[in-house]
Length: 371
Image (tube, rainbow, N blue to C red; front, side, top):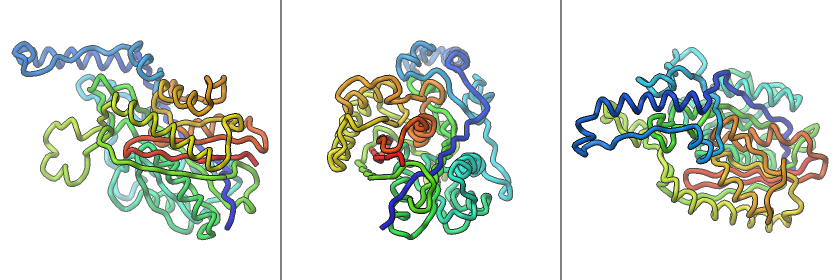
């Protein structure tokens, strides 16, 4: 058995930024248009009147101040309220593949590796732009990598589940060098017309290079990984080919991101805290051993709760980095962004814990040690 190590990470950040203030301005304009168009139904009690959002509401509810998106003008158009992401020709690179390649190139440069060194590409993301061929195989072709590639989806836990899969293959010797890439175009599956969630998501792509430790230069040893799932409907998106065959002309709310926020908080927080505690106990890692917590970037209140539960105290500055204020929720990529941006200061022997959680329910964690 080999030891697996993360030797490089990469983050692709879109150029377009939408601030809370910009988002609220367009959303409230949409609300005014909606209420005016449905005035008679609202008075008759047949249609619910929509209410305005505010930048303060968004910050207090989530800790988010802005988000990056692949397309801005479509989201901010009150007559549209979703991004303009046109379908590309079959012989043109897909959008997810294009984003993923950018992140991978950064990760490979950090690892000191070339595409031909890669044996496996695993595209782990919440939503894929098509059913097949696999996005990962397209990325493999664009990079000029060898070996094999495949897609996987465990919603917001996709990247950590992908990390365990890649690490297991490296450990057993079936591959020497693997890439876990998570191109998340969350703006495409967010319902921007829903006040309860219109602010949550942003777009990004992340990548990790996973190698045998004896072949790598330096990085983070993957000491242990652990994953768990439990079915729940409290976070759901019903969009899919079976639904679209006969319903595609209907305006169905359930065809985009939906969640029962209160139930998610109540059920996910203890599940994640218990999962991390059990993982740490099994690996004989104490709270005082942890230099860093890289948590899923879903909600600041959730992360603050989990950090305090894991450490047994309020996290100190830098111990539990948040990138929510800049990136918003980027699904599976969030914890990887935090890891990529807040790990350079760690010294050999320092230990951190990477964890993501989301729909499923799913939780994935990894104990990482700087080497």
